[in-house]
Length: 417
Image (cartoon, rainbow, N blue to C red):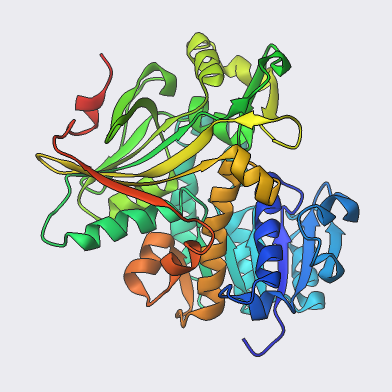
């Protein structure tokens, strides 16, 4: 890029942003980092509706604090955002906010600005009670209806951990055995992160390692969903009524079937059954099971992100993919421990895994010759010549691969009786 890199991070005071900033700060100091030369001389604009002060950000960007300018405004004010990117000559928007994806894309398209986010957001869908059970599918439908009109932007949608890095994992494994066609591809996650000191646990509180409101949207507001023959299918149960078996060599767990962007995009791209099987810490799992039939009450409880800055966390987050064949299974996953990640980046494992996906996408947008357009990560990998996997692996290391010599079969065969 000839023009000086000017990054606007929207949602800068949130949990994911902390990890992204920590990585960018490392990048500015590491001459071997793929985007070091761009980041070490960049401008940073940090935008949030409830902005923190500069001393807050110094924890994550001690070497980039001088480059950071803080802004506070509501991103639903499109005119204000347009004025901001114009005045600051923004060249890249990193969106980790709850602002409307299509509206921010519209602004970036008008200005020819690069754009990346971690998930589809649409406040109108969130506020429409008639869409309960199907909010993800409605966000996807609205996005698909609009994406074709964006011709001047280079954008990557859903480049966190999942969605994001998991699509790269899936395609890596599929490419390694091009003559074998998987029957199913399941994104899997087992996050057992929790307080080491259990006396800190409060009653009527939901604890998760990422935004509890977004977690509850998947866990209680939507129906369990999977894709088969390129078609979304729903089970008319509460998510925590059902559990599905996952085997990764000598590791085994049961998780719940959650609606997720990458389930749709992988299921559209390949004729295989896709689903996301997720297990969180046992405390939260038990609370949701105990609330079956009355789960809407959980919206009124306290919601708390498990932040190692508040108290020491034990446990780890395992995220990956499981490819299922008639007589075997192949898997690939990454595990990060909260203790290790906090010691290096002052954040929890989950947020750091998400940030690695953001970093991979940012590097692809800055370094690769990507045609104008809007891409989910699997589309980026299938349609462009990108080094996305190489970039994300710079900070996300130690992928585990293996094979199960038998198969537990498709989703309904994995269901706990």
